[in-house]
Length: 551
Image (cartoon, rainbow, N blue to C red; front, side, top):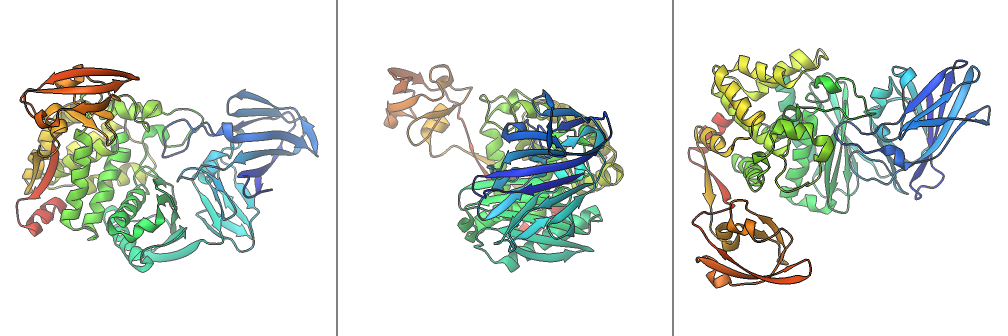
């Protein structure tokens, strides 16, 4: 089958799509548009961006019907070549969307290409009309001119495409593979240094997995003039959208870009190839409920940061700053008291990428990374490591293209640990259960010379009364164990309060709630709330680093 893509107007943001497909007489064809895309486990309903769908045979319009919100169907009256034409609105600039303007054409085929149920493994050819001065970044095989080929729908939808006259290309080699670095947007950092850092991280990850089974890999960067942060993994590439571009002149911001690059590269093995059984082959037409979010994103988040340290890019203090932020983020909320990480993984389709109701869930990324830290330190105490575990996962489930489940992951950890019962207890408490992880994190880090301190100095309203507010006085969070939780409400606006007596036994507030002015009083107990976490190195830096790296 063959797709042709062109644009009548670059800035309308519509692309025109023509699909040519040969059919047998009386053959029923089902055109299933994806309802979601890999790497984002929530319904996107891309069909809402399609218009002007029509079916023709020899330029004669034929009938068709929709049998669901994103499934089109037709019957071929006779054998021959049928043409499906439609338009798609490319107005989503992030790592998983599509964008068209007068500077570039950026496509994620998972947004608008049909998974034709009768032709799942058929080769797909794509011709895209582009200006003569455009360069193209994609992992698809180029046939000639502006024509590319995918081996199947699964291949095509997993191969993003970026074309622009301003696209810049760099590359480096690692093992026997070439790594392409494509940058769209302004560059405010030393590209040579950036490449060298990516190479050191790449070398470190490849060394631990033992191989990189791809001839080419593409980092595709969208550097934007406004604030943005998003990355998506693909089989032979990644798209990373970051902004504002000018901020990357600051090392702390460049750290973020390099960090997400390490994360997405790690996905080359974990998720793109080491996959849960439910997504071994992607069915993008409906929800696929997964319990393995800890492995998919938690391990990847932890290991992505870990290789910043192991490759030598980050110093130990810088790495611990990242860890401090993760600990602060985790224990500033209380979702872990109400939902396990397995439950939150299953509920990704419900509210996984939204703030949701207060303290309902945990982040499979953040809590998953902290659980992975604990597993890594537990394994290292047994002479193994999480990197060795993931190499085993690669050999057993990734290389062989055999799907795994969470039980397989737990069993493999148990087999590498000298204390299998401790691992079983760990999973029951912190993976399937909702126990407080902080005590264990403190204990495990103390064993390698790192101390976590809880500090309550500074914000009296926050630490002594359990009230978090923004600069305008709007209450953004109330500690569930505080007296304020029973009297004040989130989104109340604090108009006045007796700051001088805020740390004494009582505090008086004047608040605005839904347009009404209220006066309330709170009594204080001896408990303190919302600690500020501080991480300190208690041993010699080199000794601590070696213990953390398992060397």
